[in-house]
Length: 189
Image (cartoon, rainbow, N blue to C red; front, side, top):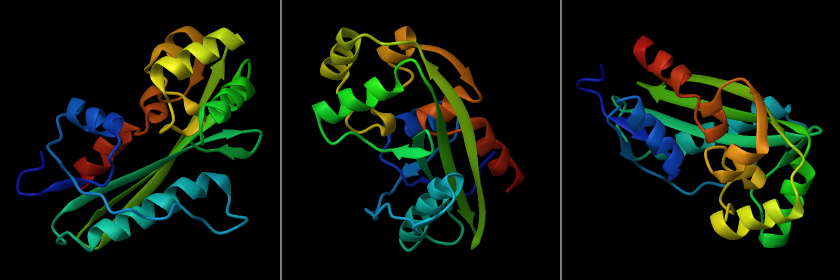
C-alpha cells in the first residue's frame, strides 16, 4: 500500500506506534522537540491540529518531500477547559477526581504531510467515567504513573476497564490516534 514511500511518525507515543503497527503501516519515528503553544482565543477543536502542524513543520525539515509525515496531538477537555498532562501525583489525583462521574471530550488533531501538501483533521470522542473512589484513583496513579498522558489516564489501561462506562466516538482516538481516519487519508495519497 505504501510501496516506495517512507512513512514518518513524528511522535514518541508508544500508543501511536502500536496503532500504526496494528494497521500494518511500516514507519520510522523522527521527533523534534517543539513548544506546544497556540494563540490565545483559538477555538478548542483547532488547538490539537495547530500543535500537530507545528510538530509536522519541525520534522519536515529533516525529511524529503517524498516522505509521508504523520503528526498528532491529543487534548482532553472538561467544561471547555483543556486538561493537560499532570505535573505530579497530586495534580493527577486532582484531574481524575474532576473527571470522576463526568463526561469529557478527547480531541485528537492529525496532520499528514506529503509532497508539500497537507491533510489535516480533528476527531472528537466523548468519554464518561463512572464515579471513582479515592482509593481507585490513587491505585491507578501509583501503579500506572500516567504522567505523560493528557487527562492523567489511558483508556486501554486498568482505569479504562473499571472506570469508563461509556464512550461516544472512536476508541482509538482516545488512545491518541484515530487510526481508521489516518488509513483513509493515506489510501487517498
